[in-house]
Amino acid sequence: MNKKLYNIEMKKKIGIIGLGLIGGSLGLALKESEKYEIHGYDRNVKHRKEAQALGLVDKIVEFEEIGKVDILFLSIPVEGIISVMNSIQNLKDDITIIDMGSTKQKIVESIPKHLRKNFVASHPMAGTEKTGPTAGFKTLYKNRVVVLCDLEESGEKQKKESEDIFKFLEMNILYMDSVEHDMHTAWISHLPHLISFSLANSVMAQEKRADILNLSAGGFRDMSRLAKSSPKMWRDISQQNRDNLLNSINHFQDELSKFKMMIENQEWNQLEEKMKEANRLHEIL
Image (cartoon, rainbow, N blue to C red):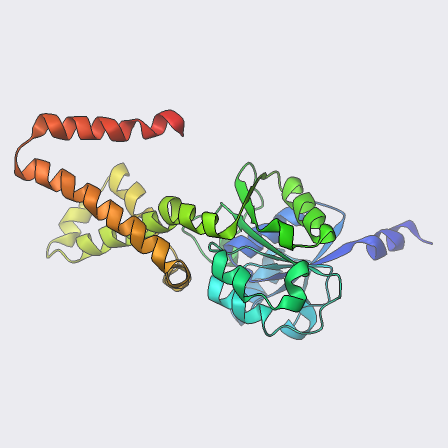
């Protein structure tokens, strides 16, 4: 057999649903390997055309065909992951399905029982505030953390294939149960996004917002950067992780109230000490 033809036939087919920043970057990274042939689907026609033009995948296919691959990634908003898992057809019996969502518990609970062994719940802790196929870049995942949840419920083949891919992406793998994952990410991911949205709205509500923004420097830009993120995606995340997010908001409000009270009471030494407590965070980061 022709060696080139043999290599093509031996390649595993990887499907990616969702060709924005997450899926597009995944496609670019996996194309660096000769082991995979990348098929992509996005319900947004413009995204499909952009992904093809940018070479994010080897081939664009229709939704009815995307399930015929060996490994399928779901890089779409968390509510969309649940919808796809309950509607997709034409799947191989031993397919590996890996979701890339930012919440885990409700997704895992919503997986049809006959597909649970095929499913790997993952959360790559990587991203930017940018969206769409043009935001993708092949080193997005390098040296970042990926959390694999409830892996004991996944099949052995599915565990190995998911771990192999994330190792190829040079990610650091952590293992966690989905309940614990959602509690922790409410603090280090979901709450910071809401704070950023709130800060942006607070400034935009001021009469002289243009004058305020003319003075904006690194601190404000860093704090408000996350407010560029997709409102649709963060609405869904907030819905799925509601209880944990409310808990983190309540604690944050309590802490902010302490700062407010110290300023109101002109307790400047206490304010400085409170800020020193916060400095300690970066001793362990």
